[in-house]
Length: 119
Length: 521
Figure 1 (cartoon, one colour):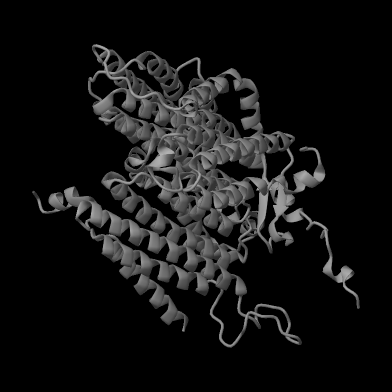
Figure 2 (cartoon, chains in turn red, cyan):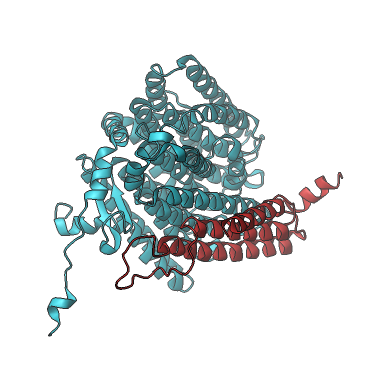
């Protein structure tokens, strides 16, 4: 299962970085979203993969990580999700405003577009 | 008031809570009563300044104070810590904010919504980043200050700012992703995020973790370099800073220093000499990248065709000098760097305000570096430019010179003093040439005094520039005590034992009210 999850992180991060390097704002936003998914999964995995172990203390079960899932990465990932969600919404708003103002969805605005077309 | 233990117990968290409360209160009232809102914002910044000075006076005793948020013992809860370096950064933030908030009064604040609320939230993020002793909490405060800075950068709108904002936001979001990877990697390896606890555990880390620990440490260096504008990662800065409104750009002068501060903190406390398998992990990179930054920034200053871009490259140059001082890795160079930091932050903020005034005085020509008529304010603006240019280029008698002289003296003991001397002196010379040329174009080739006089700005707005300029002069006048303070701060930074013991040894406070005692069984 670790291999599968690690591959998942790799594919998400790779796709995200590819899209991030493209010149259209929509692609960049999608890329950032995928990258943040990869990061969230990565944070979660840093608490080690455990199956059938809740992160809540129970009576009669010794309080060591062998019997529980680590709750801290779960809390961290929640914070990271909230922040990346908010940031993506903000970036979308900025990209829409830029599209309306400059009439182009190129990340460098219309001048970048003409440069790209060799004009 | 400060000697009162109850007050002081909670005073450490006040620089975070005060801007948060004021910012939240400003959100509903700023649209309805703009006059009152801006007065409240100025009052809050003044209160923050008084508080920061009181904290700095306390930190100067040499004690490191810790504060446990939520009253959980470190490393289980989030801890804040106040030492000389944190206190110095708090005071600088408040001073720069004072300049920005005064300058915005009656001018920039009315060109868009929620200027003062965003400014207060930015102050909250900055102060939190300077105070926190927890790596994940540092990430959160970075995000707080970044999201406020996105709003401030866009303040006033326009295609130039939108374009700069897309680059700036996308770049910083990628940086945040790397930050999270590094932080969670460190957690996976050591099981802690508290910087003091991390410092102890990294020292004892097993050799098989060396590669991963170094990876995490260097990823953090990349993230902090994005903020601090180090060589391959500074390209966002000239665009962003030159697109932002003047008071916003002035406030941003402290933002690059957050990255510098984080590098100073993490690479002495956690990955310093006692960093075990990851000891001195940044040392092979920092000095070279800093020298490169300095060399390229000097060329940027020479090549700039607009005053705003010129000042933005001056910010990059000062970041390069600072990181060079930290990268040389001794308490002596770090002390020189911290002294230089005080001067360079204040002078950069003042310059951003000054070129906005110059732009207003030149009418249509704005801040372009070409001969254009300038109105009656020429004498006053010219004097301010002369003073600030001397301070930023590092000429005597102002503090820029003292900072660079201290750095060159301390660098004499480093591995390659000749290279450091050559790059610092040649780049300073390039700065002097560029500033002298810009000054003569703007003030001497202006020809006849233009008939148009810019409308007189409100009192507060006109006061901002003299206040910051006088502060720059004051840094030189009080250079002795300030240099003593920065030397003590640098020694404290490299000592690291005091910091670790203060954070990990802090006992939770006794509860003021115990629900169990009050209840009837």
